[in-house]
Each structure stands twice: as C-alpha cells, then as structure tokens.
Image 1 (cartoon, one colour):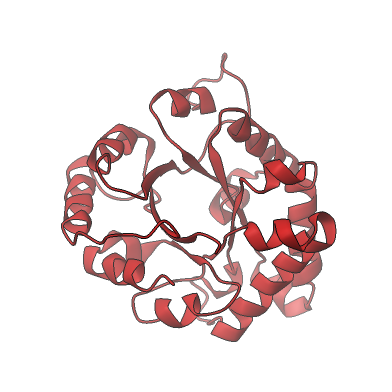
Image 2 (spheres, one colour):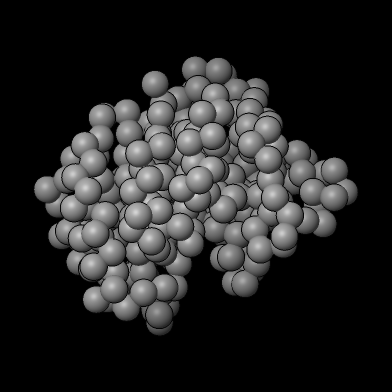
Length: 253
C-alpha cells in the first residue's frame, strides 16, 4: 500500500510559542500511526529544530522545510541549503508550492534543480503541481500539469522518482469562491498517476503517494482520502487548528 500522508503546511504563520503549543496539542491526542501512514509538519525555518525535538519520540511523524535553495552552499545571503537542512535531521522539503511559483517566480527548471539537491542529501521532496483558474477554465489543465511533471521530474530515473511525494494543488479552487469536487480531485490524481505510468511504468506510478492540496478540512478529509488515487493531503489553514488537524490525521486510510 502507498503511504497515506497528512502533511501540515504552516506557511508564514504562528510565533515560536504558538507553534510549540500547536504541536503539543496535536501530539497529546496520542494518535498511533501504522507504518502505512505518516504525519509531516512543514514549519517555518526558525522552528525546524523545535519541531524535530517535539516529534522525536513519535513513530511515523516527520518534519519538513517549506523550501530550500537550488544552489550548493555559497554566497547566497538569506538562502537555506539542503546541506543545512540535512545537518539538523530534516527528512522532507516542500518544492514548488503554488505560492513559491506565483510570488517568487520559481520555474520548472529551478524546481528540477531543487528536487535534485534534495535527493542528493536524502531529503524527500514534496513536489507541488497544479493549475490556475484561467488554465482550468480554458480546459488545458491536463497539458499544464503534465508539463510541470515532465520539466521538473522526468529527468529522474525510476528509483529516484520513487522517493518523491507529489501534491496536487487546484489553485483555481483556493480562495476563489469556487470549489473542487471530490470527483475532480480523483480525476486529476488519476491523470497524474497515468502520466507517471506512461513514463515509468505502472509499478513505479502505483508506489508514489499523491496528496491533495485543495482546502482539505476536517469535514471533507475522509471523503477526499477515500478516493483511490488520493493518498492524503497537504493541508494549509486547517493544520493551524489542533482539533481540525487531529481529525484530518484520523481520516487517513
């Protein structure tokens, strides 16, 4: 069975003290995860060591960075290298979140380099892909997402690709007033898996966890996660509320 994952993306939220309390409130629920399930906390850079310490004794819990540099260590003021992340025991890193693509103009080729840098240091990339409202309304979402996958991941061999987690973000349904249905989520997840299968074969494609990043909440998580090709969620706002995220974790297959 593919790993079922509840990944919290805190984005640029919470003070250190608030983040520490949120982790305490979630962990006190004492949710025992099977080896097929995983919880990941993607926290701001200043909180990585604290979060790592919080989950140290928890089985199948991990901490992720929200970004990394595409460069090797050097004169890049303000950047954070994968070597730095590795040195403090960080196992995962979000790559290519829609906000990074939109606000910081990260291209598919930059993201390909970031994926490579992570894999070099045995850090698991959580690779984000997804289309805007304009692209969805034009009906070209499949071609757009396929190109994101091809240009950022298809230089990898099959063994390397198996180390990737993919997160699909329907950007058109986040903060626009439009809602993606469960059927639409499943449809795109199945499409992504078919693209991977066409390139790498079904065995590789079936081994890769594909998370849904479209406003996952406690009241829709179970329905979303029940879809055959949805392997959990990359959760934004709901991950900042302990009771919400606890329910989302409990909704994993």
